[in-house]
Image (cartoon, rainbow, N blue to C red; front, top):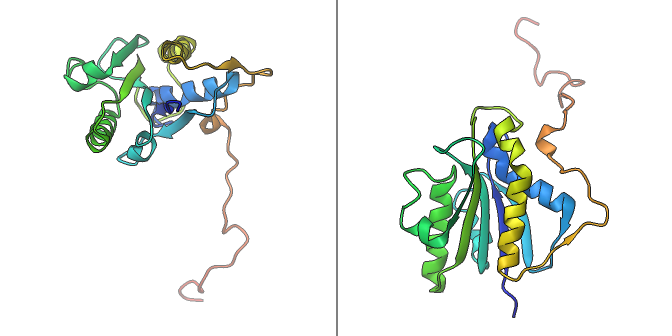
Length: 192
């Protein structure tokens, strides 16, 4: 029986560097193919719904922005450092949901999960799309670190025959439309 591996990008794509996890997932999916037992997914800014994804995983590789470290620096934390607080007061931007989900799943299943958190120090967590230069420069290194973590666990992948551009859907220009543009008001305006 093969182990189920979850590679989870965490982050709010509308808050600058907080989106490093989703950017990394888009990059990985555009450039690599993974075996069926590996789920590579952008989970956005999860709450306890993270439980649904972690519940059946044996290995969790979380990719997220990291606060309170030098912007653009790459960091990795194993399960032991996540559990003992050695990472400082605020590890990643989604620490409460990630920590709680892992602890709950481990309690229910009675086993300790193989977990690693990989992240990049963010320079900006302001509203807006697009990564800072510091975070953007580390995107390739971040993806390589995820692949290295998979390799250490005996999980293979292969380059896509035709790699594509990472689909950062949140950066596509949108065309403003209104569903009410060609409709009359629901009731007559006062005084008519």
